[in-house]
Amino acid sequence: NAGVTQTPKFRILKIGQSMTLQCTQDMNHNYMYWYRQDPGMGLKLIYYSVGAGITDKGEVPNGYNVSRSTTEDFPLRLELAAPSQTSVYFCASSQTVENQPQHFGDGTRLSIL
Amino acid sequence: KQEVTQIPAALSVPEGENLVLNCSFTDSAIYNLQWFRQDPGKGLTSLLLIQSSQREQTSGRLNASLDKSSGRSTLYIAASQPGDSATYLCAVSNSGGGADGLTFGKGTHLIIQP
Image 1 (cartoon, chains in turn yellow, purple):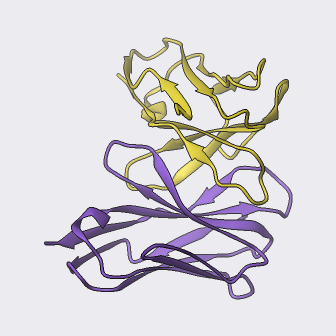
Image 2 (cartoon, chains in turn blue, cyan):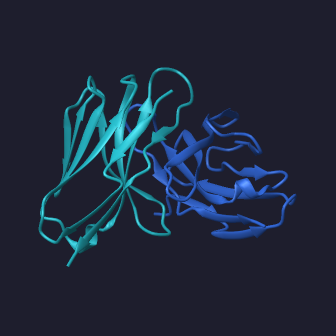
Image 3 (cartoon, each protein chain N blue to C red):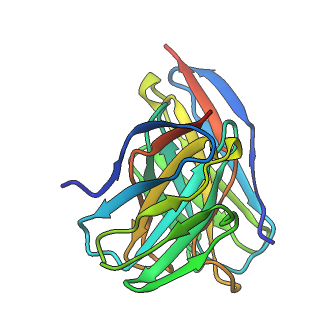
């Protein structure tokens, strides 16, 4: 019962580099989400998807891009890494918005130096 | 814009006590309210989900209530144990338009002293 799997778990990037954070879920959920969590703060929504081929911006989308080519996968791309993107990134999925809980991965800890 | 506030930010109590964590939100247009637990260096684990039409949900020693009209929820933990030590996050799923994700509070960091 894998649930939501995120890779890598840790990563250090230099300013200006790019990378893709991977997220896969095996629960056949329609909805998938990317959040970031800064120290002492709650999670903030970056992007979300309501199904394959459909994505939309959340509260803090600047500097990020996403795609959803399959139901299972929802990668998050950082094109030009900046120190302000140092954070812990969480991917989540849910079957519905109205009455089902979100299931979270273990997170990716990203440092931009 | 929805805002979620959790009080207190931190709490330390002796083992065995009953305790209450508080959550408030500014916009009552919600589908549901969810309580999560987060252990250090880990992801979030769903504890309870209360739909907007419900008043409370129970799971074992946990009981969550929802008063949508006043924008408040409480998480009651009975007979606390050291294993309950974690950060507890409250989040709402908004139904008033906008993004379909959750709006989170900053959490309550709970320590149960053995």
